[in-house]
Length: 356
Image (tube, rainbow, N blue to C red; front, side, top):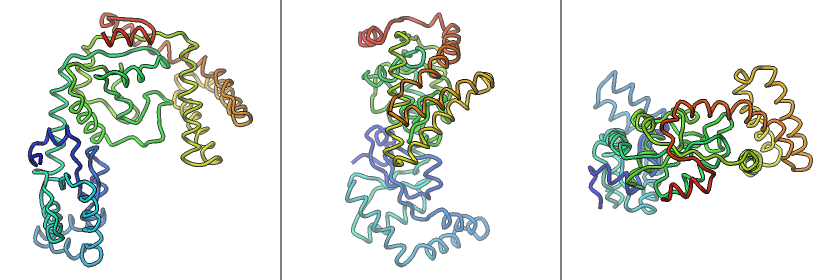
């Protein structure tokens, strides 16, 4: 069994972790392989924390035992036992490897199960993830650039050394980039990135030429610094091919996903809101008059799509949005990095160049 102090091995192997911190702590930062089965819920933890500040550790421990006892205690032990049977290689983890994980371990021993602890808890794993990222991003890397709709994410996902930053962030990067999966907290995003890079362990990296923000998540500074020095391969496919990719991504797939998640009526409303929100988010950059014109075209396209399933009318607002806003913006950004561009071609040519 992996040693409870070999944090990098635990991250790299995706070892399951039974995380007994309160839900609010877990939401603020967790590992991809962690399962949150708290010793105390948020309210119980807050009460014990207040008691600790006012009356000290002994009183806080006593209060904790009084709050989690009887049937409540048995229910929580039952969930830990079930999780351990599903993941017999799992470790226990709390915030710093202190009272909560030791109490959980002791209760599980009474139930006949011996589960090892993460020494130093989540804090140690978090520090190991930060250190691993800082080290690994020093390896050579190439960025895949190109305007919206050039299939950059598909290229990266297909490459053995590709790190899909947008996939890790649960966001496609643009104002229309949200997905149906909520974004992670910043710490959880960084942890997921560290785990992904440790598991792939490539001698060089292939990443998308991203800005410093992907939705609400920002790239770690060490990664941004390495990306700023990296060479760039630019994908430049014909406009019509790009439009078809975006049709599939924004109008076909998102429509289907919303309907599957929420049903016909609510799903349609959520899909409509998603498109409207994406356009609204850039209204000032478009200019309010142009925004109003494109919104009118979007409204008409949604009426047509709802009536007969056709997505063709969406091109009436998507084409000018690309031509007048997204393409000029990205090309301006790329001009400032011209000396870093080492290859340019269509999707297949860039894929071949990356393989070589």
